[in-house]
Length: 133
Image (cartoon, rainbow, N blue to C red; front, side):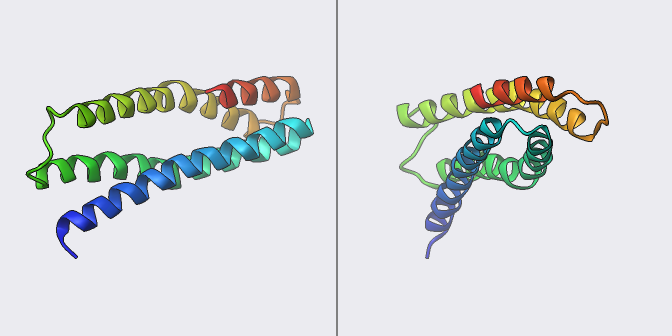
């Protein structure tokens, strides 16, 4: 296999992990929210921060890194092409939603998960906001 094939494989694999991981966390979050159990919401908040750092963040970095490297390595692709510009623009939007909106709500969920205060209503509303994002 050529370097181009490996870069393409890494880019697609990272994107699959990123999108699939986010989708799976959303499905689990919907199930947890439907249960209404404050302990389940707190456990999900811990899982969310754990998976975010160890799975989603490397997948985001891998998607961007392999994609940029692929454009630099392959003479047929250029940063001025519409599909590359669209991909970078969509990546920027998704990254900003994740970094600005979802990470802040995830951090607040994590703080509530480790606190001893009975804040079940807060947990549920924060989970609802995370699911909307």
